[in-house]
Length: 461
Ligand SMILES: Cc1cc2nc3c(=O)[nH]c(=O)nc-3n(C[C@H](O)[C@H](O)[C@H](O)COP(=O)(O)OP(=O)(O)OC[C@H]3O[C@@H](n4cnc5c(N)ncnc54)[C@H](O)[C@@H]3O)c2cc1C
Image (cartoon, rainbow, N blue to C red; front, side, top):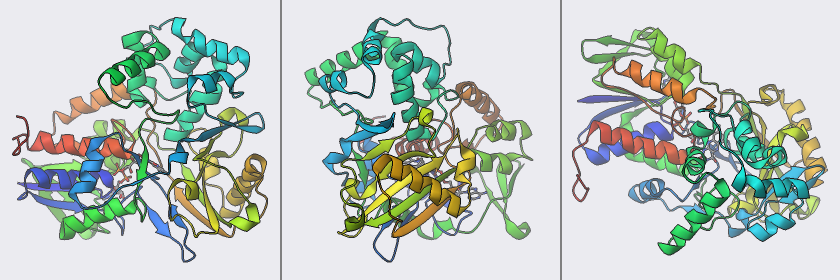
């Protein structure tokens, strides 16, 4: 059986790996438009030793599948420095450390006394009949306006570069949605889950950041996609964009450049949804239109390097997020040189700032000079950094992270219904059920399992 995979980002590569694990004889070809593998996994190292992540910065070690994948392909994960649990939010002219424990929350000045009391009132806040709430509706209803603006809104920026008044709670953060449904309160739910985890001897005491420890590799995130590509070898065809797809009997025909066609029985599209839409336009215009509706706002990643002596001690911990109410260009900045070793030379620091996203996509597309000015002005106001950076590298993503806006779940159901008409066609990637790299790896395994359901040795049937 011939299998074609379109897209050699983590989704396409991990899917190929998972299929070959289940059936080493599978005949797979991976078509990649770019001259390199990795897609949004994109590491570059400068001559003066700055290791910049143009896209994915890391993954959380809470999902065994990604760690198992690393082991299978022989690469060692690099956990972030313990101090990276320390995270900040910029609000009303100063940085506030996100509280790691309840007593710290009570003392923190991130929220006013009234705002903190409103958060405690969460245990008694009412439910809703709205089946698909926005993050803004949910956050305000449960935690109050202040906590929404200073905690939930920046979280939407940090994960999705998104607009909390558009994003769907149940599609973006299904676990939070479930905890409310199950326990009627987030605070009570989390306390009960902690007690349960302790009873079962599990360590479930994470800080305020997302659960699990951020993880990367010595040579950055591209180590993962490069190692996968090395194993997949000549199955990958770089610089080979798929232009369109048609069907002949039970085979899919892939149109490549110069009128060349390739055929396969199973076709896995692991390119972004907008690219899948273009490819499927002739085969199924209604399906293509559904895929094309998933928004992907622009985002730019601005890496600034400084010699330490010129800026002094910048900030301990991971970095900071900026609530949209602050009206800054920067959504957040990570002090990469604090998080993983080897991201800059000994005497240097590396900052990585995100600009654009769903609220201000136009800022991501500013010409270099204006973009640099905006970031410099924010870093001056927030971190007090005045000097010109010694090193600058800007990564542009015209279409960055898919937005799971209200209606996303219904759209997925309609897409599923369309797919019934196309046996052998699989749509995967981060546009559907989870935007993180971990989600992509888990979905890769699910795809492989659906294609090759026979249990492997040692696997439960
Ligand atoms: C700036 C940024 C930072 C991020 N940071 C993190 C992070 O720290 N942690 C995390 O978990 N997630 C992060 N993400 C989310 C991350 O993008 C995903 O988790 C994951 O990398 C997406 O992988 P993918 O393979 O689904 O898609 P992509 O990486 O987009 O790969 C799709 C591939 O398809 C190819 N392609 C497109 N069209 C065609 C065509 N016609 N023919 C052939 N090939 C085609 C593309 O060239 C690309 O290589 C970040 C995203 C961005 C944009």
